[in-house]
Image (cartoon, rainbow, N blue to C red):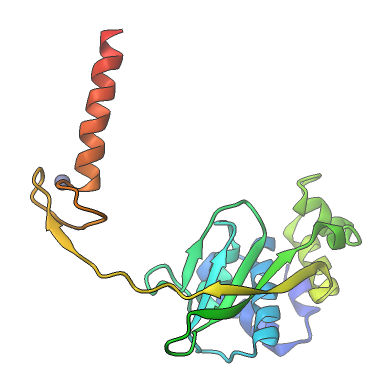
Length: 203
Ligand SMILES: [Zn+2]
């Protein structure tokens, strides 16, 4: 892997790798795809580092970690959403101007029609064969943004819902209300599964 990293001449990508690796644990192919998707979004949307960003990742594997480190998009600050569709794709947007109801974003996907020209990364992507990360990443470096497809998407700016709190009548803990339920989700689920276990016991 060191040899592959040494072949990278862009100091920007090298610094991104340096920051992402300790967080992710190692340089995986998926997290490198995340770095490339982040960079395409940055060029297309023109945001600068440290700016508030929002990303929806269509996979929970690897890719979100690049956005957590480089874009500061986390689950806790609501900058990161994961809609696990099992796709190597992400939609990125900047913060909408105050009062705006819509905002432009970019959806970027690793395109199988394009990876077909890069056998090692294609093989990894389509799970045709086991390919070492060193080999897939050197394909990704060569391909740059030539294996991605992106388009502008029109996104709805969601209103922040008002939070209402209740105390569960079963466990006494407080929780965020979804509707007008009386007990928290865990107590509701527990009593539901008791009923299911009970009826299974009869059989
Ligand atoms: Zn409860």
